[in-house]
Length: 217
Image 1 (cartoon, rainbow, N blue to C red):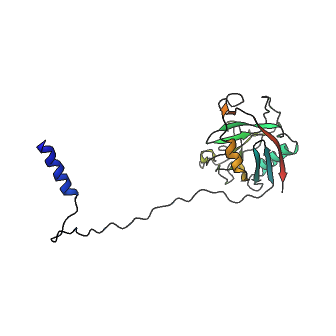
Image 2 (tube, rainbow, N blue to C red):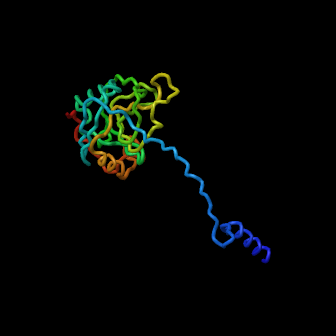
């Protein structure tokens, strides 16, 4: 016990401020503050092209598309919009904290036919999969995107084109950005999900109808 108390007393002596001759604490020069490197928040350049209005049962979402950096992806989406392919479909995938996805599925579980020609991958276009961006979904092979697309709920930079890829073989092509209705996107991203859909565990329990998708000025 005496050894323990002695050790404690010695530790306290070493941690107390040194006293000057008059019993006042000696001045200690603090180390100057070191500059802290601040990493700027990632951002995409302004997008130029037509706008889309996605009218859902939970509200409207407006998307600014980029026909300059993703011309083939935008042309592909516009083709499906013109044919009213999306009208009456649903948001069939809600991956909390990741994405919401839509395209070709109806509430009854029936899929709609898509055009046979897939879209060449445009992931190496300088646009990143940041929160609120819209990108084409695809299969594992690069040039397999068709009608399906997703909206990023968070910054998903791991979905971007790989810098080590000299071509367009990796990543998911961003073609637009939500400019209005992100609150609707977030609300959709928080709905309860179940197994009744093409994405087990990520299907909204109550189907979220897409009333229509149209081009707006």
